[in-house]
Image (cartoon, rainbow, N blue to C red):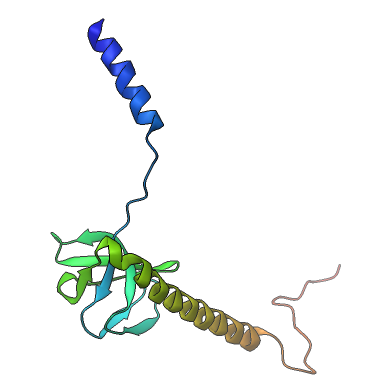
Length: 132
């Protein structure tokens, strides 16, 4: 009975504690060429900041996020930011996200323009239907 009351007290205490989002951010120590999960190739500059998603290969590699894409790089090429460095790092991250989204939108726009019929041409159906 005593252990039950301790358990209830512990649960009540943990319910009142506010949740804190714990996220690590990394900055590049050197210029690094990476391939994003969407196939784009980017050159990351020294000092660029990205959130850490995961570590791989016994922490030899790290998975970083850029907007909706991820990429892998060697852990030796990055440094984990201290908590007091994160606010300044987030500004750099936002600049990179904006550049990534603009370039992705531009690529999609060009792709759509290339797929649309040229002026004066009618769009032809893929297969003609036979009329009875």
